[in-house]
Image 1: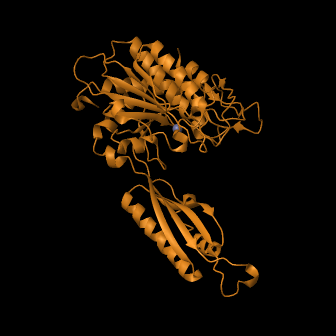
Image 2 (image 1 turned 180 degrees about the horizontal axis):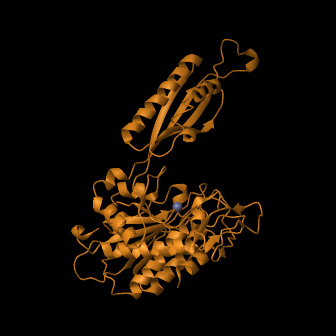
Image 3 (image 1 turned 120 degrees about the vertical axis):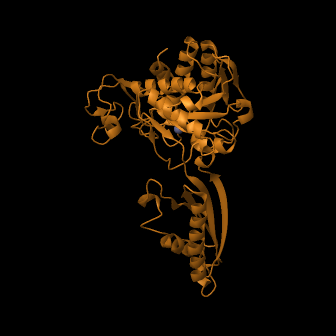
Length: 412
Ligand SMILES: [Zn+2]
């Protein structure tokens, strides 16, 4: 079955993740899609197809070569972002797109213009796929899911293509940061894996932020405001002073790009008695993360001293730069570069200004860089992909399977 047909079916199943849910997966729709995928993988001829009670689907494409070849994995997530409606997605294929504005029918204010989207402008003549204007499309990450299933079908239909054992993993709840939580690395049993969860054709990502969240709590003293003279200490004013003194023209999300990290106050829980500001700390090197933490703590301590409040800090680790692990496994990235080239594309390598499930999986013992799957404008009504993007993602997976049977000295 063509990869586009698979994709169009998967996006019509509502798999929106829900941060408020305590269950795993967070929503039942994800299980609905996983059950469908399990049945499809069995039909195609994969072995060891298992769907566990937490909604993790794993399966194996058996090897076609007898010699010992390492087991590798391909991973995608079945959930979609909670930030946008994801039910009743109506995918539209704009065949052989002529470059004109694409007006989405269910909301004519939702318009994709080549002038505003250079990635789209590069795809004139391709079959562009969008939603209908009121929902996301779900290419993030059903493009990755569809590409992996289609590649599995291709490999099983072509036993003449040499490859070792290949494991497939479809995970829930990536969009709410829980995708790696219950991923059983030992049961997956691969030496490395690739997430198919990226944008433009040729993209290969193996560096991510290192990330902490710092909770800064100002403790004041509350009393009836009518009789507060000389007694009240307002924690809200301390927090306001603190936020105002954070760097404005540097070290902020609004003023940084590429390899520059930032500190970002993003949530405040305020009362006179006690005000907590949550601050995201981001840097590509973990020592830079510590520096940013010290800077924020110094500014907070000054604000506390100036306002007569007390300040408390709590730092929690979120994830670490996958490069710290992948530098120890250079062949994992080198083989991906080779596969992208053999598929006729140019590798595009850039750091991820965020984290992926691969960041966490890499530190859990499964080195996992990220590959493109043709996701554009994700988490938006203007999300789109193309049939050609999906087909190229399939081609890269197939080439990568083959590349892993070759000695490193032959990889170019
Ligand atoms: Zn994704």
